[in-house]
Image 1 (cartoon, helix red, strand yellow):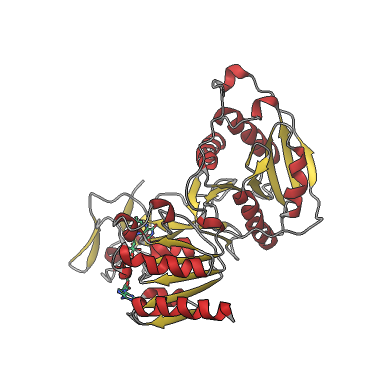
Image 2: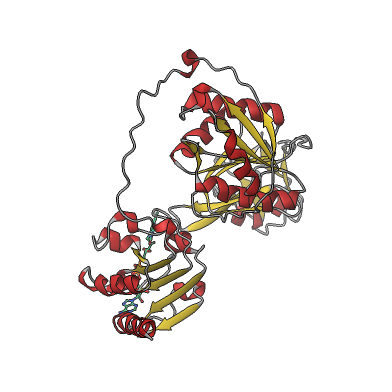
Amino acid sequence: MTVWVEVDLCNGCKRCVKTCPYGAVEVVDGKAHILENCTSCGACIPVCKQHAMKTDVEPRKIPDFSDRKGVWVFAEQRDGVLTPVSLELLGKARDLAGDLGQDVSAVLLGYKVSDLCDRLGEYGADNVYLVEHRALKNYRTIAYAKAVEELVKSFKPNILLMGATHIGRDLAPRVSRRVGVGLTADCTELSIDPEEKILLQTRPAFGGNVMATIANRYSRPQMATVRPGVMEANRQAGKKARIIKQKISLTEKEIGTKVLEVVREKKKGVKLDQAKVIIAGGRGVGSQEEMKALFSLAETLEGEVAGTRIIVEEGWLPVERQVGQTGQTVRPELYIACGISGAIQHRAGMLGSRYVIAINNDERAPIFGVADWGVVGDLHEVVPALTKKIKASKKK
Ligand SMILES: Cc1cc2nc3c(=O)[nH]c(=O)nc-3n(C[C@H](O)[C@H](O)[C@H](O)COP(=O)(O)OP(=O)(O)OC[C@H]3O[C@@H](n4cnc5c(N)ncnc54)[C@H](O)[C@@H]3O)c2cc1C
């Protein structure tokens, strides 16, 4: 596989030099030359207006996926209770399926869990692929991976989504390996390309400094995981799903692991993902002592206090109160950002908030770009004044 230059056609414009990601093209005496470090990636070929760049690499053919239909969601349940992210994903799956003109299906694995099918129907599933087996009672990697693999190979879905929970993060790569496809983990946005009708999977990349959109043209199903709290669940009371029961043969020997006891660690602390009001602080608050004003406002509004990674690192708040790419994803009715600049990694965790109020003394702070209301001012004056006003209005 090589790339070469038809020197007679080359006009030395240097487009290929600028495009080559490996610095493997140079122009000498007005003609392009390919250097030894060329990887034959082909990036220079479409940019050459003279058609002087040639290759013997055959363009990769996109297989025929016309038999791949449906948007599937892995309906994760623990002890017969569906995880909220499964319902959120069904909401997103409905939008995607609408754009594709296809069905939404939930994949429900477990033991004596059929009563969950109605709920899956109400949250958007047209079909539920139900696999019940004693060996699927508690999550075990091999057993669940085998069950999903068999379903995928038999029914050929177009898209398969899972929650980026502990279970989803374990199961999704296993399944993707078994069915021979790629996987985009921790997506923050999913949509359908209107022309190619493929899944566009957006997630933070390069340490969260850019958002990358990944598309998979060459294999099916297109697989992605999404963190809890990012998508929105939609319930349509009374909507029923068609139940498709599947049998599976599973032996303890092939599973290889045994659950001796399930020990649940009681989760301490706050449930930011369920808070209706969040008062969030950033470095602009100044110190742990000055966080008290935010707690006071939160108490007045019956909300929770959260913060940026910086203030967690400073020790002003515990880590379970961090919002953002490496913290929690929240979607309260009201998010009040106090002394927060609005870095992309922070915004990734709070963009689902219904209303955002930003208080910042720098009118150019990026947080104002995502706020519904902005107060340009010193938070040490604005926050106590706001608390006082709300308290007074409550007394009336
Ligand atoms: C891989 C990676 C992951 C990350 N994950 C996260 C994450 O999950 N969550 C997160 O939050 N960050 C995360 N970060 C860090 C992120 O990039 C930012 O550094 C951080 O969000 C900035 O925090 P801040 O807004 O508190 O501080 P700053 O950016 O320093 O902003 C402070 C703001 O306060 C304002 N201010 C100062 N004094 C006052 C005052 N008296 N009144 C009003 N306003 C005032 C300033 O104008 C400024 O806008 C991550 C970074 C990386 C590289």
